[in-house]
Image (cartoon, rainbow, N blue to C red; front, side, top):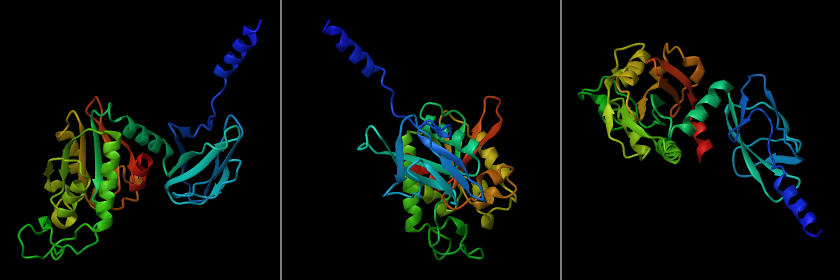
Length: 289
């Protein structure tokens, strides 16, 4: 008779339900919200009583203990802490990703996380990182002036740009994304963007990715797509160019704004057609810190 209550207790412990966030917008550890100019609301649901509060160390926002907040925030990644009533000393930090197109954001995050194994046909296209030192001297007497790394001749990376390049590279390494081909514009700031990632890549240059100051093709997004199709490999392609990749691009509204360090993800499918996966703004990489 003594064994019976012990067995019952053991069974109850095995059947104890885990603490869970049950909101349908909480997917693979990220809470996805669609950005709206008029503001938005968040209501984090759980299977057991829990309290929510702003994170003390990272970008965050005010939230009620119930998990509700009315928000008027720019796109970005924000962080909220959560503790369940039955284990108040255990704090879980939840990333909140706010982007204009939630469906594309979900697809992009999933693709990046799975790219270690499912990488066939992917191409990560980036605008070079922050480059605010010097100016492009388009009438420079120097032959092929755009290749110069001299700020007296062409605009160059600043320290913030190099930090952003390393941030992207660190995330790529953490995700174990197999970059096989790295192709840059001929501009020094684009080449050095890939170098700042510290991925130990052999860098090719292609004038079709050049800034409009040294590129006669306008628009040139089709050249970007052609380069992706021409260089299909077993691994992921990394392309680094300039703002002119957005001009007349059919997907431009899906990855605007296209600031320095921002990018977008493409994929060549099994039929050889190029698909837009989603926007990859700089802040997105903080999900993978």
